[in-house]
Picture 1 (cartoon, rainbow, N blue to C red):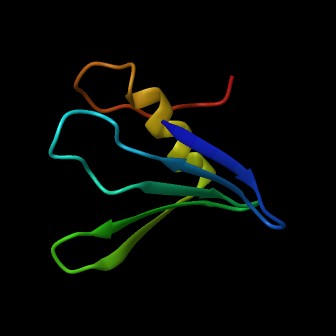
Picture 2: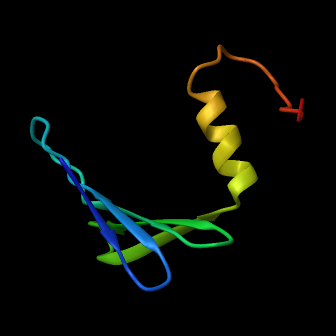
Length: 77
């Protein structure tokens, strides 16, 4: 399950784990004009862990999900 919200400066997507137990903490993705942040609470420390991706890194991640093991570099065509 997921939710989508449009805030003033970002689009916020929250991914909610509905699988079999043990369930993972919610993942919150904020899409800003210049970057994407991914946050999740670490249940062991009860602290929020945040990762920031550039749009180039996000593009590479999207491509990587459909490719076999290896080293790649995307180029504009």
